[in-house]
Length: 286
Image (cartoon, rainbow, N blue to C red; front, side, top):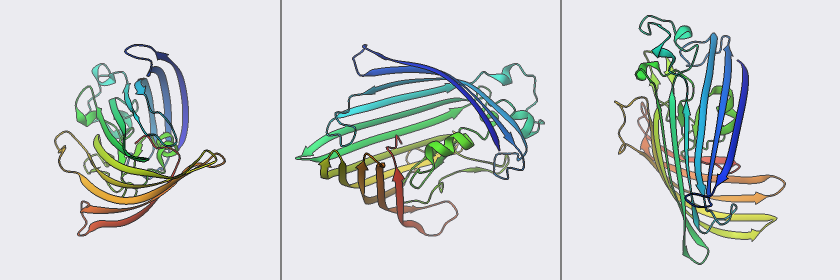
């Protein structure tokens, strides 16, 4: 796969409704040139173009980026492409995948929220909610293979794989990497169009030295990933719990290791996910 990308963006802090808000806008263009790619994108050879307008509205009042004790963070990301299917006169029922996905068409909505609550002493509760949705201007069958959600594991492949494959890799501890990824047999496409995830994490510092910040944590997590609105069930969540540790050193950044236990079965499996170890690098938004 060959990829060419261009991004032009502008962001600024605003003082309404308060001084914690930031708004940013950008125009992005991606060109994916596939040749015998061999993955479930609906086709293995062809060209896909993505041209989208993106906007982000966020509010961040977190008091400390390394070990927050209070504050919150909200973020709404919206990406919109032109509605090509409204004017290209293409018959999507008979067109080949290469024709249908030559120009990606979608509108994508991502919402993230974090709250930090001091329980007692240095014991802090982090509460998080993450929601994502991808739609099309002419029905779900027009949504292509790119920009879809891959859920499960440590999310370590996040930013790098997002750029390479045009996907959103989202962690869900207690389950293997990318294990919660729906598959559309008819279109031979992997990836969800709707996901949600909820996290409660108790944190306690071991060392707050700026040269080596270390804290332990325990977590409860639940989430799932669906292929379409017809399949969506907000109460059908895959649950997990576990413990972990985070270490921040200026020379290496934030490093983490978690042990999680998945309580639920995955599609096509007879047993629970069970125990899993996960490694992470950097601060993960989702």
